[in-house]
Amino acid sequence: MWRQTMTFKPMLASPAPETIKFPVLASPKLDGIRCIIRDGVAFSRNLKPIPNAFIQKCLAGLPELDGELICGSPVGNDVWNRSNSGVMSRDGEPDFLFHVFDHVESGPFKDRLATARHLVADKFTPGSRLIMVPHIHIGTMDLLNTKEQQWIDDGFEGMMIRDPNGPYKFGRSTTKEGYLLKVKRFEDHEATVVGVVEQMRNENEATKDALGRTKRSTAKAGKVGKGTLGAFECEFQRVSNVDGISSSHTAFELGSGMNDAQRAEFWKTPPIGALVTFKCQGFTPDGMPRFPIFKGIRQDAA
Image 1: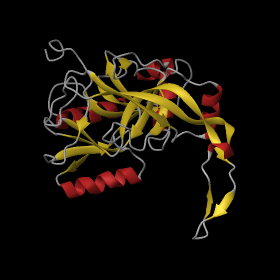
Image 2 (image 1 turned 180 degrees about the vertical axis):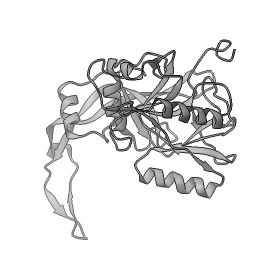
Image 3 (image 1 turned 135 degrees about the vertical axis):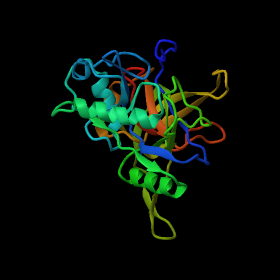
Image 4 (image 1 turned 90 degrees about the vertical axis):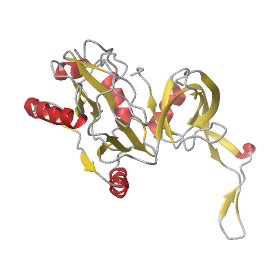
């Protein structure tokens, strides 16, 4: 009856407030591609079938598990980019694991988690590509802060926390409800690539300052193009009111987070009009992303 009377949506997280209601069940914040099994088929968070045929074959017929698909290691600066590339490509056999953290059913999370563990254990065989996301019981803010820092040091994005008695909400859990919250120093956003900027080499004459340190003028006349990408010119649309109406457009440059091969590729074939995913530490008062870092080009609005 629970499934038949409601329109399914994956449960999404809200930012954790400064005051958290304990106890909570905490897990490391993953940076993969959301995956929900419905009627034996793997779907993305937008309820589109996962494109990769190999992944669909590996996960076919599983019970209604919820988690993230990650290609390779779950930590590192390129987790999202390599996972998105593998999961969203129809062909190929990516080296992936399905990191399970919930079971889509009624009942409190502590019971759903126990069920998910049982289902994963029951389905687990060598090559099954299923793994449970670890959860720990946390009862104090000191322990939460300690564990969050540990997971960040380990290379994860942050921490997810859940109310052990919270239901599986169809849609986004509010901060007040606290069913699913994210403790994360960086937050993900998307922007549209509207232009590219060439990376420059400063050939202005080097001089010494009063402390003996080398410095160069930033005059444009002394800079030479390096024939590779320096930054994307991006346009970001912020949505800030309760009706979901866009309130402003912000133009900014996004250059950090790309390796040399990506810079060369994007300069040769600029992805104008593409959606780029970036992370930042919030926004300035005038709407500019703080310390934006490139994560990847969206191959699908997944």
